[in-house]
Length: 60
Image (cartoon, rainbow, N blue to C red):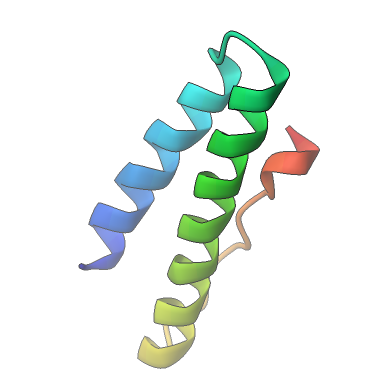
């Protein structure tokens, strides 16, 4: 999966966190967004394509 696909999936996950109906679902979706953000960071590091760090879902 390339960076653009991961950024897209992260953005969708963050939007889903904001529209989650309850705290448990926000927590679950936040974990998903955090996992995607970690994958983005790892891929950026491997490619030497460092960018602005993504905001963790706990900060949203």
